[in-house]
Length: 471
Image (cartoon, rainbow, N blue to C red):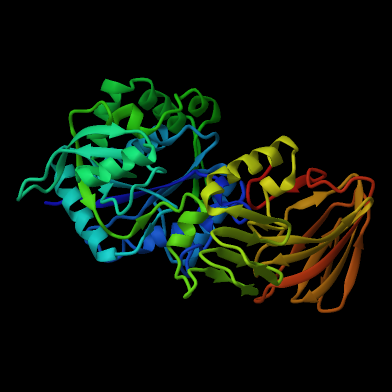
């Protein structure tokens, strides 16, 4: 009898090369960059139609937990676990945690990054079915992308020549990212494939190979699971135990050392969307080779990608450029230098600039807020509270707040007093007053908040009670 396939979705990345759309607390896997759905949603939706498919396990950054839960709810996906990594430890520990979670049934794991594009779903399904056969036979399967160009941004897998009836190919070597001349040689050779970072194997086989080749990983992960805790939809790993785990990729820890590794060739329009140039490649271009989205006007522009989120963007006489506009930042880069966008993010982090971390619109488990204006001693925000949700019961030491309801209904608790406000009504929350904001209605609550005081930072919050388990 065939095993079930357990999708294991790795969603721990921060997508710095796609700044300013991708930010630390809202990275690329949660954005609709190549379709109507977000990338993590597309990763799961493209699995539909496979037989014997089990509910997924999702491994994500603790800071992204509510984004994952909400985006799964939107596509009616119910993971068996959303495992929260308290610190990043690369892919080998993440996969080990998933294997430990799945070891009781020992069903075949299909490990997928959350941020890839695969255009040909039927070809992908066919490759997964081949991978299932090999994984059930005790192999560690990876998928090698049939190269379409001498790409220097990917690692490669050198595979043995294919036999006529071969389901999978023996792996001869993993190769680091090459220079252009070497990549051209690989393309001409025909036995080199792009390393996709996608895998299939049984938990028992993976754990046995980890014990053989990277013995410290599984014990640390097992302890992190045992000492962790369950919280609503989430499985929290113990921070101290998981931090003690070696930080290493599954390639380095196991795949490059094991004798059980095999590769399934995959030609399915794959792209890891690792840069703005890659994103331009997966979206349709106009007659001049331009990928354009939003309020954009061009004159004599060729082979460029121009995205406008909030304002009119006009471009004249440029070629092979990337222009990305958001509410609080604009990126302009030549296509040949898009890999260097990460250096801008490094500078932002060094300067402790919020633009590295958040968009102007900040998502919260109850909704979102957006800063409209800010100056010394005052700040104006637009707040959206989803139906049936509430903010924490809280107070502030350094700021007072004025709330004006724009639409919807607000239930506001201040001390022992509860009031209901509707459109065009307002209230005032003084310094050090315990308060709570709720939306008891069926439509989103929109309000304008004016903060005034000596300090307006988000860390000036004392929470007394919180539905979402935040400190």
